[in-house]
Figure 1 (cartoon, one colour):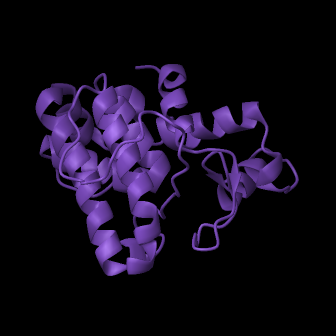
Figure 2 (tube, helix red, strand yellow):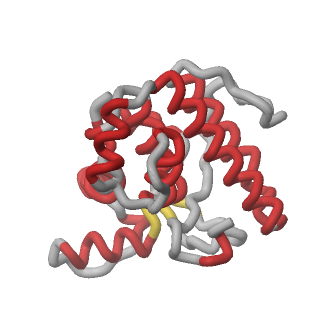
Length: 201
């Protein structure tokens, strides 16, 4: 899938402007946190402003640069690219690449190097996709076990993951979470690997 075709799935789960009191990521607009927005605007020589005022063109540029390209989604096979992209947005590029590496038999270091490129080009997506999605589910479960206050977000995370499974042709499994039939549901972002040790479970 292309970036343009993948973005609508991601945005379905990002909603508009949210600032949930239990979310340590703080203010977020369509999945872009204030911190990410500040960094992007600074790199482009623009003054700081509230993420509430994020423009559509800025949003698309941030998603493409910070997640699609950063995770090398264009270098992986169809359907696996969407899984990688959505995971990079939801929980960081390094964590998403780590799940990918584990799913294709690479050493897991969160960096997309030549060995990872070769492995993803040669992998069987029918085998890698369920392994990737199962690794993401396992992470959610470990995180909620370690940080019970995040249980409020589990339903949304699992609905999003099961919708991803359905989108790439996999059946949802084992979450015991009813799917909502397609209604938009905001799901909170998580820190990337190494950003906050409390989330590296």
